[in-house]
Length: 277
Image (cartoon, rainbow, N blue to C red):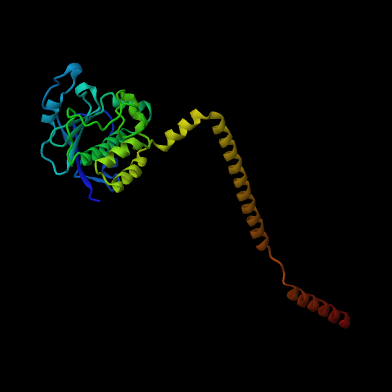
């Protein structure tokens, strides 16, 4: 399977920590990141309501020339219609963390998960549309309005995106539609496997489990505590027994044959003294 090459750039300032190495080192059989994640600055002001940037302005801000098959820009400014992602001309996309960062932070979801989700969904769009990324204004009907934890959830309510950022999936209906657009089963199955790696950190998953099932969590903790205590006791007893055996083995015990010889010599000496007397 030929990997799709993707360029990524940060447009403007990101007021939060973003782990670029996580994206650059992401292991995938479907895509690869070309070069580094480079930085670009805004040269134009906002032109929509509530200080947002229209597709027209963003198309000027993103580079037109790049090495990969398509380009993804990351920004923090609001974009047209208050979407969190929009498709632009010349196989380019823009992902905005405006309002999204607060949603992800509230749910303890790594901010990088949103970018990974957009990358995988864009790859499928690219393949379904004859290796092109259509503009958002070009209706393609790839999404569904209801939330299913699927890559193609519409997320009309931005907060619904959290349901597809922790082990997301591709729903059966979407798989049928993707197959109809001649995307190979190998590609679909590989993407389904890889998106399962898009997860919350284990600490927060454990924390959520404790909140959902506090009684069961207490029982598990008690059982675990008893097992640890028993294990420690067994290890201590084994260690103590070995120490005692080692001490016993170091105690000096006279050799019986030597003791016999010494006794015989003492008796013989006594006999000589008696004879002399």
